[in-house]
Image (cartoon, rainbow, N blue to C red; front, top):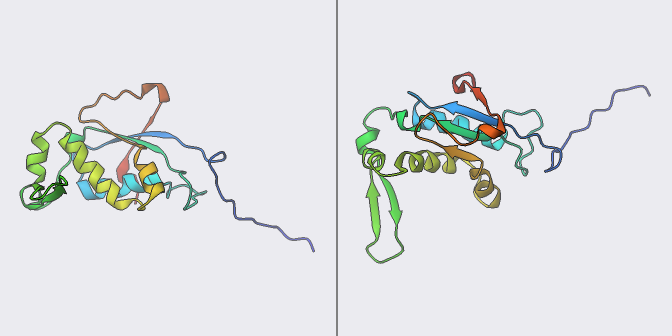
Length: 153
């Protein structure tokens, strides 16, 4: 029989092609930006996506301090963390976190982390995210390409 044979290609660590991309976060809504970034990190936009392999890109977010929240979330949303001691529950709003050192990075990392798989792969994927508050970053040697995040669904 003369037919074409199509085989599903499963990517592995050796066959995956990871790229470096730069995303400008100026005037982007936090949740919408982070969901697209999580898909980029996971590799969902690639044709050879494999669920159990790190086949996504390394994402550099610049101008992170210019992200926005919709509605009253800037003052009403509450992030909860726990120190590990009795009575050690701490609460912060995005407005309070913005004033702290690396506060905006914490906001974005927290949002992206919640959109990645839980477990060993998710923790490994989160290491592919780099957040900078200004326009400068230290990954010029990797020759990252700038992408428009609004083109992705």
